[in-house]
Image (cartoon, rainbow, N blue to C red; front, side, top):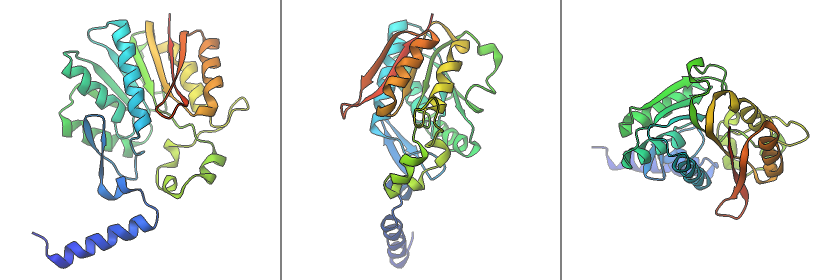
Amino acid sequence: MGSEPDADLALERATQRRLDGEPLQYIVGHWPFRSLDLEVDARVLIPRPETEELVDLALEELAHSDVRTPLIVDLGCGSGAIGLALAKELGERGVLARIVAVDESEDALDVARRNARRWGLSTVSFVRSQWYDELDTSLEGRVDLIVSNPPYVSVDELAQAQVELSFEPAGALVAADRDGVAGFDDLATIIDGAPRWLRPGGSLVLEHGSEQAPAVVGRLSAVGFHDVDDRRDVAGLARLARGRWG
């Protein structure tokens, strides 16, 4: 058992970290996401409420397709929040989902694996890949759902953001511009690549910035997705896009 001086020193250090602008979630070392409590540190993004809404949309798409053993790809999994929440909640409904969690950061995958072990979610596998690049080709045309909360903050937006954002991994936040749209590069890459992997009737579900809504909807339609929709989040901003393939 630690001594009182040790506890006082730990509190002093935590207080200073917060005064320096470090997010509370990193100081605490874990944070809730839906029904999960996830380990988080500076290697991964902090789970956010709007991303919980992305999981709701993903669940709606799976219910619409009525697949009993869905194959799901979580692109840019970070802490594992989206994929692990889907695995847990689908399992509680008696649906055995196979989830492939993808991230280009080995550090992020380490955090996600720890969270999967913590919750006993053994149907989730992990792949180090820049988006689709290293996915097994046996998955082509077989995926029921691709879900992603990719980087979509532009360099200029990050420079103007609150100090807490500077503590999060820039590679998981910042995307290059494309086609005159700030921070749109990774979103466009994911949309363009999805048809190769989705089965007919499969869905792509994306979180994006509110200013990118027209570009995301337009890109989904141009690539050939149907039933394209862009949902508003709890703040009333268009942030959650969906497209169905085939």
